[in-house]
Amino acid sequence: MNQLQPRLEQAKLQRVSASGGLSARRRDGTTRLERLYQEGAAKIRLPARGDGPLEAILINTAGGLTGGDRLAWDIEAGEDTAVTVTTQACEKVYRTTAGHAEVTCKVVGRSGARVAWLPQETIVYDRSAFRRTLDVTLAEDAEALLVEATIFGRRAMGETVRTAIFRDRWRVRCGDRLVHAEDFAIGPDVAVTIGRKAGLGGAAACATILLVGPAAAAHLDAVRTIVDGAGGASAWQVGSTGKLLARLVATDGYALRERLVPLVAMLNGQAGLPKTWSL
Image (tube, rainbow, N blue to C red; front, side, top):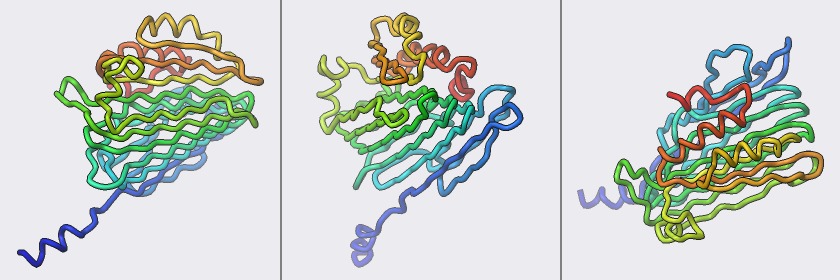
């Protein structure tokens, strides 16, 4: 037993290395799948639909992420297509023993495309380490609705996040212009940071909602009505397109969804809310 123990301590745990992606093209007046690939724990399912956009559900069959895991998604919406991407469930980032979990997301919207990136919430656990990048490239007349929501411990489950590392990097380009860039970093003293007024004011859940497109600013008043003191929203004209940015802050995931769900349903137009969000 004593001879075996050092070997067990040196053994490396198997980690997730997975990727998946799809591309869509317009044929016969509707959006159709052109290409789909999936490797490892990354799976994509396409539920039955009517005349609406192509809806893709991303699945991490590993059941969560921890240090050393790598997951990559690649989505392309071809000319004049409509694509909605969501996840089967909330992504969980568990305690790490070494290294960080990493997710990279690449989204492309060709001319006239309408793409919605709508994953369900990311749940961050105590002593976890996580990095995510979202790179979006749009044609000048394309539109994108991008949402990421994060919960730092589920209060209903008695979870508290005291120490963790969380990094979230967004880069959104329209034509040849960078129209949105942000780097959200929190940790290692998460509890201290989110407790400050300049942080989350003691809240445990937050969300960023970004709409990019020529008519984005037209939704500003409706968005502010829904946000109603639980965050803020602004709109800008950026080159030939526009963008609307909203932030939500809430005490927990349930309170966050009370405002996030109607926001997504409104901003996603006729496509409305992804099916998995209402399960």
